[in-house]
Length: 391
Image 1: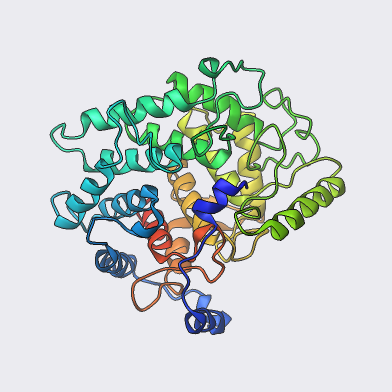
Image 2: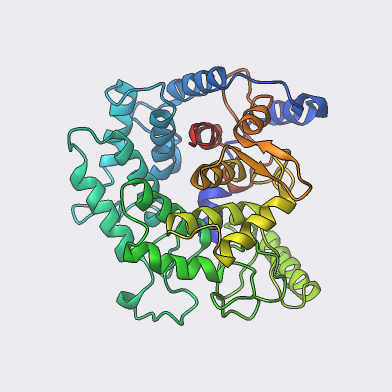
């Protein structure tokens, strides 16, 4: 993950030493099944976000990252506990509207593509009687215009074709931002055969570790496990490792990435969160389960199914993983999932049972590992509420 990515998803609010120590001290047994009540979890999470809103309508406004507030508004509206005309929502939307460019999208916002994607979700959820029709259409147009395609001199044989990065300058496309864009376009009404989604599918397919006609990259057949990586084309340090003020860590990350690639014969290790992101993106682009890419992704998921951790990363990035998991399972449209060992999982119930013990008394969710900004309870609580609302 590059420095831009780390800036948005790699910082933590800072819980204080006592808070982090308390989190780490929780007994492992506390994370077992407890048959949590999803309604109670949602109610507490909503109450937490309500009291965390700033006077200007933002959440974590000191970061100057409108995407965080867009996540909160989307999560609150999807929770089913907050109505559009709630003063909290009105203030949150007004805050986001300050960033809307007359030409469309949040073009001048930090990380403009990511911010526009999640803002599109928020404005779509809040759209009543056509109030945000123009904003929604402008966000859609901005995202389409930001996509790497012929408009940027890219042809379909370019590894970046169809993808999107965070926005601004020479933003490198990645699967996370591309999947958020595809989800926002899908949720706001674009059909699977929309040209933007079909172009994005080309990039998504190149992010899959699968030896097939859809991935012409040199790493495609090295790992070949059906999972997904962070970006196609040029290989970068692992997500979240680089960043402002962490030059030593970035250097170590590059060394680790090089060693990992050497161990994998030039391949790139699949990431579980990226695999769920890639899987749901393929569904949004209209692929069915008989497609070789979808089959391979489901095989990977079946072999690595768990809600106890983010497979391969432990607790790091856990709540992003939960969000991708929930949205992917919801996109698949089945109430159960059978893993490689033949166990049938009620994924919604298991998600509730994973999130329940992790919710704090305040109603917040937060990660003791603050990489990817999961030390910020506003972000993580929004992720958790969006995951619980997935359907």
